[in-house]
Image (cartoon, rainbow, N blue to C red):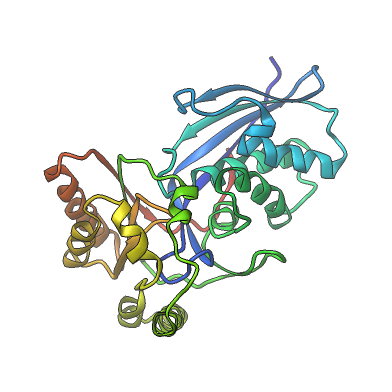
Length: 310
């Protein structure tokens, strides 16, 4: 067996309350790993998938990591090269943590590393997005871009990948709780209305503007005041058991703000330091413990590196 390389692509929080399909940020954990190596047998093969309980296909054209890798190989003119992937899923499906995006990012990153980095990480984004599109049905970068590049990112235009990293409040931590129920992104999108009342549009636009101003000024009070979603959250909250109770618990424990991570069911909260973030996690987890629903809590600083070679 030939030696290979290992890449890690972290989880991410999409939408970030005020920025549906626009703002996302990168977590330190959990994430997906791919071990990749050259093979004597032509073509890309996924030889092993761990941590997926048999739910993911090994056919590269039906796997988000495989699609991202294949599209990059086509771009590089290397489709005949023999390559083997081992995919290690270390995050849950349908969790709202960017699972499909992380796999797609890892797939593109692994090929790029095998061929000694012909592209920059930013140049890998279109290939990772094609992989993630297989799972989500949409071409949007609010999970893919943070997982690949790290940080908190504003996506101004998906088609041209016009995006910008935001400054991060010093000491800011994220708490994410994943109640062990499954919500698929496609299903969570189907319940969304295509129309928005003008009053809600104005309020949400003001919230996003206020949040961005707070971040750029490192103004915690302003960030806390405007980290609110009045459009998507009310529509999706009904899919998440005890969402509003968990949100109230997070805010009472000192969180700056709290909302749905991606399509859910995970819920994220942002806090001004790690101690508050831990308290927030404990408070939210108590809600689900009392409701006899299993849950997993992740407390993480904002990951500024994104996908890495390990």
